[in-house]
Length: 379
Image 1: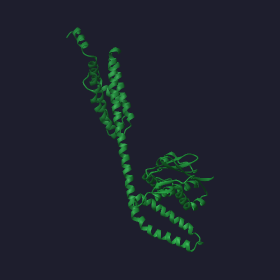
Image 2 (image 1 turned 120 degrees about the horizontal axis):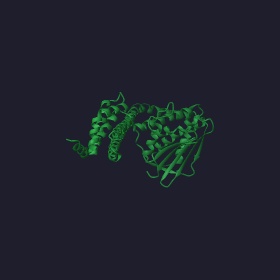
Image 3 (image 1 turned 90 degrees about the vertical axis):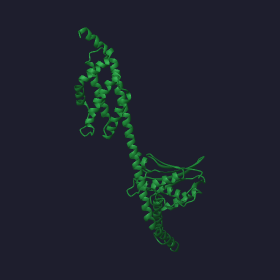
Image 4 (image 1 turned 45 degrees about the vertical axis):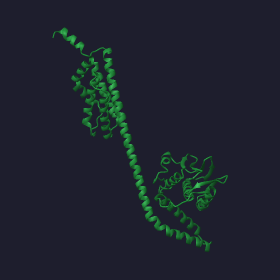
């Protein structure tokens, strides 16, 4: 074939085909340069696969330029790499960096192709399109895999929590009932002693501590779900607060706490009285404990709002601010900031309020920590 016919033959071959052939000839150098710059960890379980995938991506790019491969096949390679990156627990940023290094190498060799910019611009556009789509689909699938993995771990943690609660319930059922009967007897005999010997010292303290212990037993029994024989009733919230504050009076006095009442009217609410008593008692006891850190005046303020369809109870104290992280987990089981706390008190409170179709929230700033309870008016 003479020179004239050779030139005519080359002109008839598309620039895509000529560029693809040029890159194929330069492939060993191109891959070597890419590997030298790529971020590949020695500990990566897919270390050898990374080089194979990079070479395959370049091959796919050339095939796409020539029209011999479609986007779905590029996407399939992207999904494969996404699963490998997720299994390797690697930084997805390394993958993006390595992909762009391969793109840069293609552009460097394109500059050696010695064609006018008007001819090579379509090649540049196609290369960018393949790489952009490839990176997009890989990162998107990687994110989905990681998100799903996090959700599965979260579900596992939630199930573990439920198992722990079940174990706690079984433990409670096995030993709490064993000493509740003698405790009830002791409380009864203390009451008889108070009736027969009203001047006897320390009986009020003993009686108060026994009732505190009985309250803690109620908390464990609620978690173990053994005490369910209760009747919904309409009762005066004012009387409930009065009953609780009388019970807590020794603790309030000993802690030098000022109790401020905000009950301007008689308000009735429906529910399980004993359970709601447990909620209010727990929050007030926690407030007294929190105020132990205060050097100045110690204040607990409570009020009840009668709204259109709801009753809203506010209990706040001027104790130390609760940080945001603790606020987020304050109602979770086994979470406590107390040295000897069980971490189930506020968890039980949340269970009881939700059982009443209500809500309980906690907000805290430098001035006040407030527990807000919203209960529907109808049972």
